[in-house]
Image (cartoon, rainbow, N blue to C red; front, side, top):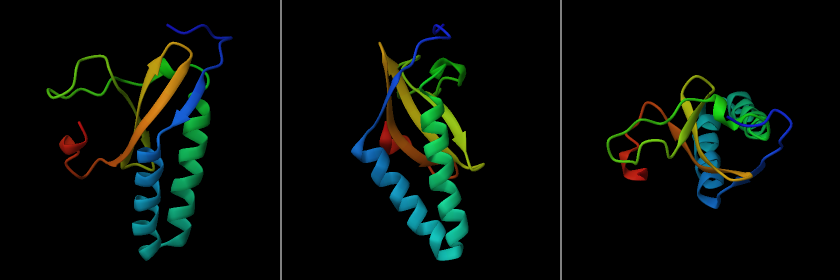
Length: 105
């Protein structure tokens, strides 16, 4: 378990940033407000990973090694997928829970 005083560096991969842009563009076709809210929530959740990144559940999938990735639910249907290594949190993907994301793994 992480030390409560420790601050982790959050690193957002280019792929995760591109996925967020793609989801936001799609949402904007229906509602610009929803797209802006998704981006704001992503920024808030990513920032919150600086402290206690271990509070979220593991991503369980038979195609990935157990205990590698954690998941953080955003906007009721998107997962922020990340891993913790030493003093850093690596945000690797943003996926829509309603879609098959096995290709990502």
